[in-house]
Length: 513
Ligand code: BES
Ligand code: MN
Ligand code: ZN
Image (cartoon, rainbow, N blue to C red):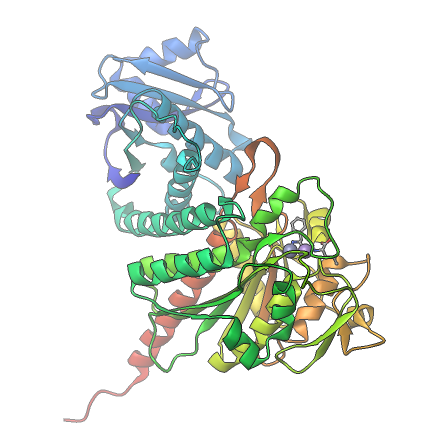
């Protein structure tokens, strides 16, 4: 969909539909009041008669309102004003977009963006409106033989700002929102694709296509190269599958050549049966989402490239299928990881950490500014945090706080869990340097504790997205998370880099004559 920004009177918009909000009970938003004045109290009258009271989730579509240039007016119920926060704002935009799309408006001018929210400026409201709109219209129907097309779909959404002075900031926010939404769409398309189609090879092909589209550098290591390097932990996971593993490296060079890269590592298990430690049948189909981490880091790179951020960013995605074939790794097998540390694989279903540990060692060669890995790593994280917050663990507190702040800013939140040395005890093995599981207690933490042993050379953080990357049930599908968090993290790093450059320039003495 196309987005644009406009300041100006709602009553004068020559468009298919203007969208304004009404709080409970019958309290008009500022834009709604302006329409009402232009319409000589028509809306006041309507609300008084009880056609709409402003309840959240309610709408009222009006045609040919006197004194209004637009063909239609859509009133969107916002609920109680003092309960109107981030989630309510996003829900109101989503409802407006769904209604416009289903009622034949090809275009709409939306004034919900002017509604004040505590601690959220116009940039936030614009970015979130763009993302919520794209999320509402997202469909994954390419595998259906007939697509049920909307007859007159919404093509263009114009977002209103109250004052002209807000235009530059709002325009910038629109571009950022579009880039992040494009990244989320990319992630969703990959993650929703089933395991028979989204294989490690397919992921590699998608990374190559992305590189071509955005002028990025791409490299894919095959099985032979991984054997050469000694990535035996990763290869142990691939052994039960007919699908060859792929190790994807995608580079975006927006920063100075000598600037250290930010490295994002994503778990790319294209299907997780559990291997010989086979998972139960119920909901096993959802393990096609086990490559969400990989999809999210490729998507974050896409967003960074679209925003032309002045940073160097590398996305690394080990892509492997975890199957219980005849060649599969057995519980109790011991392998030597790329780092040289040996691992007793007590449970083949704890496979994510096995592919990630070799990736974490591999990325040392980039001398990263920092490394963030993203993985649907543990069922325990779903138990701890549900589907609201991603789990965050880190060996550096400044990096952890940066990511928490990015999640808060993006409204794609994470919550930190401790990585105390005490948890390492649980990984003791009688036969190798460590076991790949740490028992029932603190499953999310022991998984991160395992990874931390391979991330000693740099500042590192780990995001466990098992509960947030996708939805189950009737609305089953990828959420596009944590692309917004990652994108905001990169945005903030870019802002800092630019501020540092600026002050360095200011300090430099003027050239001698
Ligand atoms: N991909 C799963 C984690 C997962 C579970 C993600 C549920 C989303 C929803 C991971 O590979 C896994 O199987 N983890 C095991 C680890 C255990 C064997 C230590 C788990 O969480 O049960
Ligand atoms: Mn598993
Ligand atoms: Zn898994």
